[in-house]
Amino acid sequence: MALFKKRQVGKAGEWYYCLVHHKVEEGPECPAKDRFGPYETPEEAAHAMETAQERNLEWQTDPKWNDKSGEEDEGTGTSS
Image 1 (cartoon, rainbow, N blue to C red):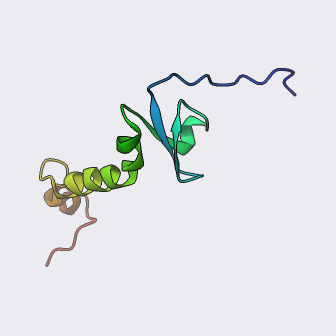
Image 2 (image 1 turned 90 degrees about the horizontal axis):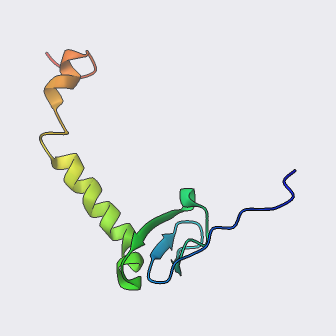
Image 3 (image 1 turned 60 degrees about the vertical axis):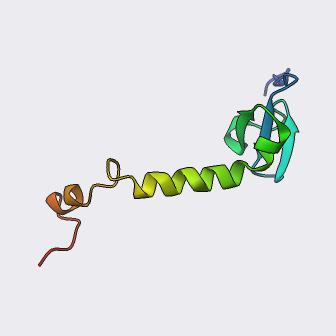
């Protein structure tokens, strides 16, 4: 058991979106595994989920990262 718990100190002007509490935080209040950020403004942090969704969609539709022929070569694709 640790005698002293290391607390992360937040910096003014760094904004995060907590995935557990679904809220914007200034400085890292929650563990890194539970947050997105840092963002420059609280407004950017408030839209973190939308930003992540947009980036995921871009990745899924990017032909450089979504190569169907590679899946077929590995035997995971469907071919007739």
